[in-house]
Length: 188
Image 1 (spheres, rainbow, N blue to C red):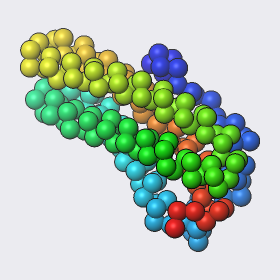
Image 2 (image 1 turned 90 degrees about the horizontal axis):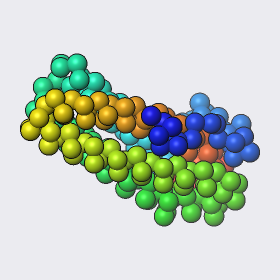
Image 3 (image 1 turned 30 degrees about the horizontal axis):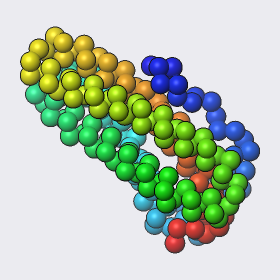
């Protein structure tokens, strides 16, 4: 499924993580430059990871018939919308506000910026297809459950792709941005 969307699976180039050696992930919380805004940003990333796992698990539960069609449709509508809408809003804010701030503070960020922005564009394609497929599945649950099961099978695969994408992208984004934030004492 990842190949369908041409999602980057390789590691962020080492030169894009220059400051990560100086500010490793396990030291972030104790650093005096680790402020509430950075904690909040990382919290949003945790929420996306949880939502991606939740929509994947819900699809699995529907397919194995441990979640009723009506419950699944309601949960998919609510949590799928939360995942897609919040990811779009978050990435829009990053692209227009957060990333330019990091780029202005440290030109080393620019080496990774192109990779992250391409990730955002690729994720938009996946989320658009996910939304269209989810809307069809919800309609089919009320019209023809056998067709709905097939559509939810596709949604399950897409959920796996979204989860894998977020695992790679969010980790790279964090490991590029947070060391710059700490080094320059940004985001007070």
